[in-house]
Image (cartoon, rainbow, N blue to C red):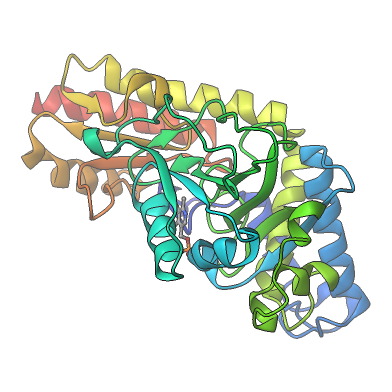
Length: 362
Ligand SMILES: Cc1ncc(COP(=O)(O)O)c(C=O)c1O
């Protein structure tokens, strides 16, 4: 479709074109029902199949054992900042690593709940431009919570921290879920807002290990307990049917068209290299905002040596069909979000534009 742009928005963000086309093709009549997927009961066989397929795909993609339950929740990833400590502390003190914005908010919500979370490390000293590597996690911590990719600063864990025996890792993977393979074993709980790598906004994919479900206190309100949706295959109440349906199609694309997590990792590495090379080979016209070893493969953040040119860069890029390159309002600069669904052609066109813009304005 000729009028589609390369969309570098951070979320909601670009989705695979083949998925959007399938959604369009079957929107008025889902699988011969004479109804749209948005009109079908969540209690129908058709929708039940959608959820079951989505769950099975996540389990296959990540190689999850039966110890893990996959859920689709509401309230956004932000709701998880409160739900995690409500559900998973088991009377102990939670530990957090603060890599900015999202983990800062998660820590704040734990405090709001009257907890006194241990912040074992923070990269605030350098404006959250790196991932802390030197820290000790208390052996009696309830869990260690991390944000695997900071969407705003463009930093990403390239290996996950080790924790003492019995201290599960918990991760907000909103902006890099399913972008690479990883061993789920150390993780007790993983959550991700769908609107970046998984599909449209409106659902949060969560993966919970069986021993974490045992931690859930009885006295939480029904919809705040993880056990509620875990026991009902995410249908304890009306779920975000449309969002989950699109997520399932995106998972199908990832499994069947791309070929799984090893393949998408390879592609993501290649795509990120194209953009980082454009920055690093610009003779200082552009500079990366994150520490080299912690650069995100999902959100490439950069500045222009003359910041007055940043607005011009974003505007001229948009004229060329390269949209959404403005940095987050809290940090400024520029950002190219290159999630799973961003094609290689998009980053190549961006790199070309970056070189031309530097030549014209340097
Ligand atoms: C890493 C991370 N966590 C949490 C959120 C918040 O997600 P939501 O808007 O679904 O609450 C975002 C949103 O961009 C994010 O990037």
